[in-house]
Image 1 (cartoon, one colour):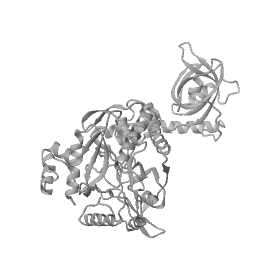
Image 2 (tube, one colour; image 1 turned 135 degrees about the vertical axis):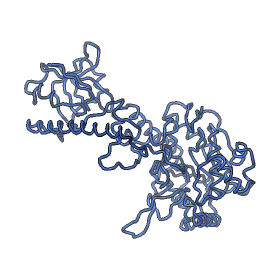
Image 3 (tube, rainbow, N blue to C red; image 1 turned 180 degrees about the vertical axis):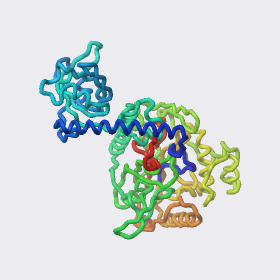
Image 4 (cartoon, rainbow, N blue to C red; image 1 turned 30 degrees about the vertical axis):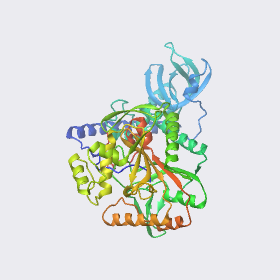
Length: 524
């Protein structure tokens, strides 16, 4: 159920071509890099000749730089980290050391360095480079300019770097280079490290919220014979031991978690990785983190109340506010999760924006409207449900939210329970923020005969060319025949975090999947 939406097109930065001038510049950088690397490999050899291991295995008894800054002048301190700046000045060398907690100046003085120090001051300063990891043992002091520092009595090389760090502002020239060498992006830009911490708070606060509401965390299979729970194309691989094809899951165990409801559990959730073999862009990824919960004896209305509370809790815990200025779809949206959440009726909203009754319109009329608006869609297997979905995605851009899309058609919701008072409409809802869907839930269908009928419809759609239609799962239908209580399910992905960071989802993944470089290629 519940996850990212499929898009057409590919705006991966790695598609960009390289001009002849840029290629020449890359070749020049490669020559310079090669020479620096050769020099540093020579320094590794010199260290070994001096009896110094440039990659020692010993643990380092040190305190964080943040803690060292809190010490009084004169107190002993050992800090360790990466050299970010190195400035020899005769008998005194100044440097900047970086660890996860921050940066701090250190000073190496010929006079203060221990007399039996190996190597001595002159050799040491020649063998050190920016990028090396070192431990600085000495005393906390403050310079004449008032800067917190550690005066070295002993310097231990922990890791000798072979490649120079790029310039913070111009060394990595484009987004692809930053993402491909993300470790350098994190090192050079503190805000990326802070984003990683924020993302950890996002998932931690979500887990805590659900556990506080008596949900039990579960783990369901990532390899399946039949994918279920979403309209998406799976990754398929051959399982050697079983000698059969398997799929990586496209939902967070929807059909498995509902089996748990059959088995007697009443509130379950899972947070994990799921995979979709579809187009890739700044907003849509092939592997990403997802959360789904399933709640017995609840319906879509109680689900919406809980989800609204969930969003407010998680976003407040992660960002410290509920009010945001967000930029999506070439527009600016003012969004305040603390206000009342709107309700957007599916057919009414589309009809109001397009100016005609889409529910009664023919499929040809819907497709003609798509063409007139210039909406890019996959033409193979295009049917009424897919055409309606494409028009909805176009129309939702005008909705700032926060709110819920409600009263969606049965054709696009094969696992949702129908509304008894409105044939063809299901008890489904989507979270709407800044013109996009940031979560999907519904009253779960628990009628096994109706589920079997809908699976057959999906099978026919797949046979007609709709590769995103759901695969029938007769074993799941069998489980439903034993009886599943009424329930509400809901899911959201890490796109929620990216939206409130006001960044692309690709930027907010620590290591997004990128096109492989040609051998010897340089992404910068």
